[in-house]
Image (cartoon, rainbow, N blue to C red; front, side, top):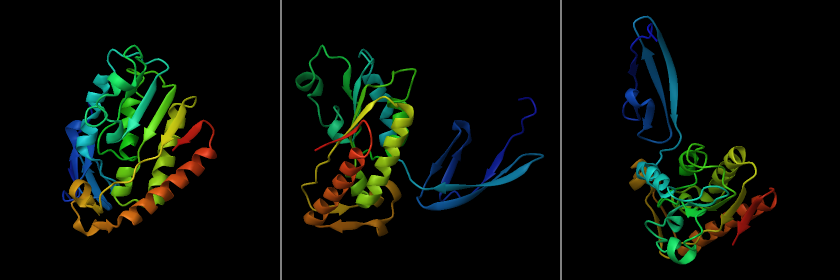
Length: 239
């Protein structure tokens, strides 16, 4: 608009960064509440930014390549596998399109991204599931998520709350779609959770669990997920 004035932002750059040319705010540390002052020649206001969660940028950056994977496939009435490395044909399930799904079956495909969490898929789904320009509403969504959430210290209850939110979001965008949640596997090595390495760089969040403690937590998550699926229509738990 011809009357628009140039804005200048003042904030604590230890915790956030405002990319004005990209219309986005980047969090640098979780769990912060940052006051931002926006000022122009004639106006001034303040607002607060809460850094509830930091998305792992390499995961988000992988979304365009998964969109490219959809080129040449029949997206009508599709069955889409979303999730972490287990459903990532580039890094893990390499033979999916050769041995698992017949070549002529073009409406079944993987969109998993290694290291992704349930929370990451709040953003990734906008690219890969709800993007009406590239993909009609799927007939089925198959989910394999939760292992990385547990790894990043959510606990069974925290991971379940995230899963509920994600499925609720899917229900809003895809009300007729059948949703299948696949139980996740326990890690076969001793748990050493270095959340700070990837997300917060805060070594105080290190958590060490024994194999049995890790398995118990995973089974508790599965029990909560199974109960939730049984109580909701067209949502299924697959063990």
